[in-house]
Amino acid sequence: MVLWFEGKNLRSLNIFIGIVVIFWFTVHLLSKTKLFSKKESDLKTPSMKRKFKLFSFIVVILVALLVLSTGIVINVLEDFGGEPSNHDSPNFKDGVFENLQTTGGQSENGSTWDLLGGYMVSDDCRTPNEELRSEKYEINGLEHDEISITWFGHSTVLIRSNNISIITDPVFNELGAGPLSLGPAPFPYEHSYSVDELPKIDYVFISHDHYDHLDMSTVKELKDSQFLVPLGIKNHLLRWEIEEENVQELDWYDEVNLTEELQVALTPARHFSGRGLEDSHSTLWGSWVFKFHEKSIFFSGDTGFMEEFITIGEKYGPFDIALLDSGQYNTAWHDVHMFPEEVVQAAMDLNASVILPIHISKYELALHHWYEPLEAISQIGGDKNIPVATPLLGSNFIMGEEIPNETWWRGISDCTEPFLDENPMAEYVLFAIGLAGIFWVVVPRVNDRQSILEEE
Image 1 (tube, one colour):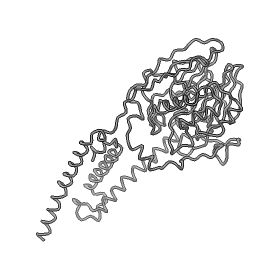
Image 2 (spheres, rainbow, N blue to C red):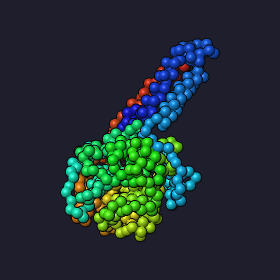
Image 3 (tube, rainbow, N blue to C red):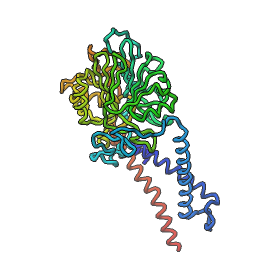
Image 4 (tube, one colour):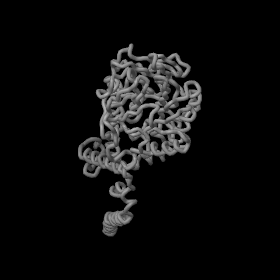
């Protein structure tokens, strides 16, 4: 059975079997003691009632330890951020922020069981099986009105002129994206990146407080920069010892003139927030509009497709480029991330000239193949005559010049079928061995029982 599960990419079931074996072995060891043995007449053959008591005792101890450790971690660990607070905002009601458009956490089109089944099956194409191609980051020289864009994977994008540098959702932590770094680990890149390699960052823009967008260690490294964040996120930064004068909170459609060359606005997105167990929707999420040296840039953050794209396009467009949430989609959470065809439609609604897909190529957060968004959006964008920029990780390109469109993701992962699907004879052999094993166990026991009955 173990070999069959492994051959069908069902390692999760083998892990479950391993846990069951550990519990069984622990109960077996405890049965050798006098625990819960008061009413037992024969300690060598413990009753099912006693075994159940021992099993329950183990479960209670584990749950108590889990609750205690969780409570300590949540109250002590800095990574969870600050405490939620109230806000005078039309988008804040009954202690939580709400989307402009009805948004459900679980889509009607997605089955929880189908989703669980999908995650139980391993797939070597959801994560690349070798290092992703990338360039060593180098600071390029710029003319007065030139804007350079550098994508570092996921939603981290450096946008700079010759005198101002801004960055979106900076995450340079090479550990897992989650509290205690227990979240998914980043994909391997040919070149790693760090804050030390970047030019001085003047402004940091955060879209929301999920761990793959707001990383405590990176924020601390950027403590001398100015942070612009949606409502509520300031509490996180203050707990991480960012000076209050370096943080500015905005509500949807708030606008700020930062310099003569840079004006920004926080615009709506269709998503949610939260870093702990009980703070979902307690901070605002959003997208950003940048008017930078006469160029218009839209950064979506995380968002599902929404009607508000049209309003944003009419108010702030047309956009020279739109950095759009393009990955980690699934029918189960269709409302909060966009599918490829929706990404292209969003660009059309925003009146954007170029699409730069983001929220991809760094973490395995969904069931689709890691390269699927890049391939699909490039094809759909081509069909709709909307250019799609696909720069190499860490590379620089200048807005208004040649759009990078190298298909760098092709040929990196060699997707394979489960071993037993590719070798059906091996599956037949395993089935035969398993059947023989069942007879090997069952037949002697039946014979023994028959012998006992005949003796009686």
